[in-house]
Amino acid sequence: MIDAKLSGNTWYEATVDRGAPRPALNDRVEAEACVIGGGLAGLTTALELARRGTSVVLLEAKRIAWGASGRNGGFVSNGFAEGMGNVAKRVGLPAAQALYQLSRHGTEFVRCEIAGTDPSIKMGEGWQGCIRYSNAAEKQAAVAEMTRDYGQPMEFFDVAETRARVNTKRYFQSSYDPTAFHMHPLRYALMIAKKAEAAGARICEMSPAVSVEKQGAAWSVRTAAGEARTPNVVYCVSSLDRTLHRPTGRAVLPVATYVAVTEPLGQDVIRTRSAISDTRRAGNYYRLVDEGRLLWGGAITTRVSEPARLAERMKGDMVSVFPELGNPRIEYAWAGLMGYARHFMPLIGSDGQGQWWATAFGGHGMNTTAMGGILMARAIAAKDDEYRRFAPYAPDWAGGHFGRVGVQAGYWYMQLKDKIDERRYGKAA
Image: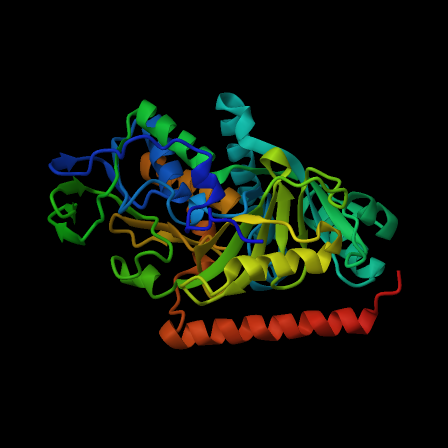
């Protein structure tokens, strides 16, 4: 059953009061930094710059966190969208360990900001990652590697313990990350915006940047009715504007994922308030939220528009894992557009001429946007160069339209490999 609330609105938007839009930029302002993009990377950059006494103006094309930052699954954990094994192969284990530590700083930043201002934004502790075939050795090895190489606390759950928490025959062994948590991402973003303004940042909504030009020693960032002049421009636009800064714009691919939220449920199959996912290469992620509703995400694609009959598709995924749910009513369903680089790592860097970027956080953005914002602020305000750890992941052309076709084909291939794994290892538990 599909509810009439399915009008493109998200459950997150339905459970906040944004208030009136902030005034657009309609004058000329001078600041030490201009941040373009009001998602979590841009907001964190503005907050941390203001806290360091740096004057900063942030330009948002629409409303704060209207894109992926306010539409995602709300999972917060250490790491990146790229697996740490692949990171270590590319940069070596010591450098990979340093990058992982930066990702951990991002997680703790989010945790501390919530705890210090509004603990109700956090909605649950821990993250359980389940496999859909029986292979205890594989799961135990992954847990041991993260503990040994990265100091990441992890637990291994056997089949009985896995199903005691998530009661489905689809799952076998699982890992548990006690340092992860989940939250209301839009409430968090709005909180960070208010904190940035309280620290002295100026945030302008409905103010899309239309041009960025070097004029003497400063950059001129123009909107339809205003201008910001600054020695430092920080691009935090992800996949939503790929023309303003060409080096990063051509390196980012838009990838869509989908989320649905049910009516309040009386159920006894999901017996944990932790975040849950399966470890397929293009799997599902979900959690219980307020009123016992189930928030369910997945169905990754490079299609920008929402697919037809999205709610039915998401419900089909739910009941394939938990048939005991019956026919739950879907009250909200929406798409979120993420930005990925080809290497699945964030793009964080500078051209050395006052242009900075922190973007491409798709797939693992709640901690890495915080990390990116902190690195940008430290670099601009304190001349800290730790952001250079991401130099091996410099912007690289993602292939344009052909890149999107390749990514989609890659996801189809991964889904095929997932099915092969499930058949190979069987379902004998």
